[in-house]
Image 1 (cartoon, rainbow over the protein chains, first blue to last red):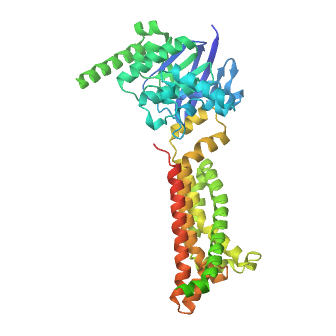
Image 2: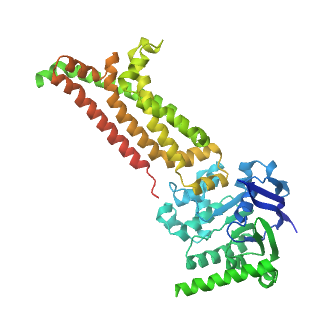
Amino acid sequence: MVVAVQFCDVSYSAEGRRLLDGVSLALEERTVTVILGRSGAGKTTLLRTVNRMIEPTAGEVRVRGRSVADSDVIALRRSMGYVIQETGLFPHFTVERNAALVLEAEGRPRTEREARSLELLSMVGLEPEEFRRRYPHQLSGGQRQRVGLARALAAEPDILLMDEPFGALDPLTRAEMQDMLRELLEQLRMTVLLVTHDLNEALMLGDRIVLMHDGRVAADLARDEFERSEQADVAAYRRAFRREMRSDGEGRE
Amino acid sequence: MSGFLAQYGSEIGELTVEHLWLTGAAMLFATGIAVPAGIWLTRSPRWANPVIGVANVLQTIPSLAMFGFLLPLPWLGERAARIAIVALTAYALLPILRNTYAGIRGIDPAVIEVARALGLTGRQRLFKVELPLAASFILAGLRTATVTCVGIATIAAAVGAGGLGELIFRGVASVDNRLVLAGAVPAALLALAADGVLGLAERWFRVPA
């Protein structure tokens, strides 16, 4: 197994609270690892240590065998894609410029940026000629998230970090986006770390599922094992999630 | 009326140019100080309250008193225009400083987070993201400061700095309303023009949500 990202006994505390408590994990190259857990479990905090948006208070994160603390932070971040729930699209840039912003930051020529931007928009299912000149406020939630994903892929990163990427979308758009992402990931074979609290999303997209609870790893299983596991934390999460799904469905009816 | 304009027309023109020069120079200095200071405060927010507080205090000093305080200072007191420009700069600081700080701090945190996470350098974040997104806010501050300074600059004539205030003071002293109006009307028109042009610029830079 080739390890792309490794968490070595990583802890993080802020304002007197221990948000990560001795997390050790190794993410295999070209696989999708989903970090699952309830709100406040430490999922986002863990993801943000990979690109040094957060510096661990103890332990070490290694990317491609090298400690991120010893890496140039700008180069490290440019080597990874990053997608968040709120998209964070730049409202004053067109879709085309948003998609190719990392290339612009790297000083690549305009013609290369434009060509790559059109390619990226097609990849995420947006008709380039229709969308390239639009601004984020002229897009739907799903279209914005597609642009966010295109932007994350611009510099052809080998690692993609996704924090609840579809959390703000309606169920139909969410399902469409999950299908699109699954196809895209099969095609690109990147190392993906995806944070979600949605069990169905985890089972659909993840090769491996890590369940977090109170800043610790409660379970670390392959997708199929996770579905069947009788481990107390896993079974409890599955039950709670399905109960919530049922009550959501009844509420809608 | 035509006789009055024939007699004072060229003087009104010269004093208008002088007024523009005093206000323009002060706005340049104030922008050069307040925009970088506002940016610095967004990086060191614990200093925001004390620094904005000092600018606030400067704003509360009555303008005539401010000109009076500066008069005995060495170098500054030698030329009335210097006193006027320094005083006007002090009055213009607060709106520009406050709006630069508030404009940058008010940007959607998700946008700033992504800019950092995508590997934009500090300078790229500032020039590609923060300043363009805060531009309409900063211009609103500049607009308030400019209109205020065009008005306050009329008082600079009290220390001999020239500008349209000179006509107003002469008109008051000689009880000649025509002279008062000859100073007040162009000053008001200048303020309205500055307000209109900067208002257009502010709308141009406004980013739809």
